[in-house]
Image 1 (cartoon, rainbow, N blue to C red):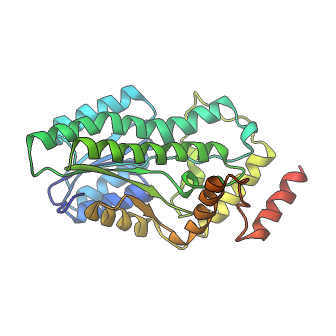
Image 2: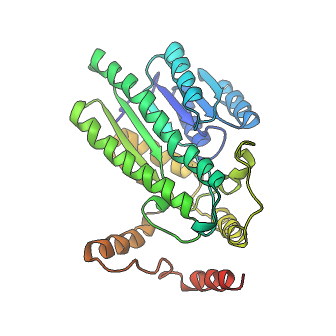
Image 3: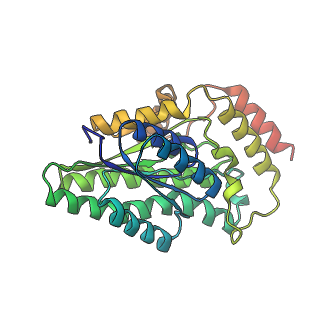
Length: 301
């Protein structure tokens, strides 16, 4: 929970687009120091120029969040420039689709590397720094927000790696919240679970590293990509809307942050099935046409 953002420091990964960029814009308006982190240099340069034009103090770093060494250097740079950050947004993420047995080892390493290990590194490096600052200053307030997804609370078919990575982030952040409550009243955490929002994630293969090359996409992966493009592109809730929800949650100490609370009916039916020990429910119960089209497409391969 952070009551006043002015003069505080925010570390934002995935800051060149989507939620990261929109949070940077809000942070600049609120008078925060900004640490902008992205793997895409041109997007990072553009974001840095925009925030500096708003008068913000900016440290911009091109970093692959899956790299322990690169993230350790980032943490050292942040501490040297601004001291312990107050708001850490572990937000960088990539998407991937296809039937779960068709994904290559490189697919798994890439998606888990960014979506899970990026959050792991952000938590393991910045939390101790924040707790140290809290011990030294009784007025210090810190908050960590990790970006998961509604796919971290559901198991939509044909996007298995993504689901696995985001379920791990939800579990990790819930545990982080509980662990922090044991040791400090000054640092807390939230998890962001957006649904389909136009952010650019459906085109995340643009930043896939050369050492983890994609194989020729399977038919199920092509179908998944087309579905993702359509769903993300037609989203009515904007990345700016979600970024405002993130800041509202940090200010109020709210843990779960949803872009589309109306999607929670699917979460409820999944949880009820778990409690009752019955088989997983139809994920397309609310949109049977979508399920039927996907089934037909996959069975015609």
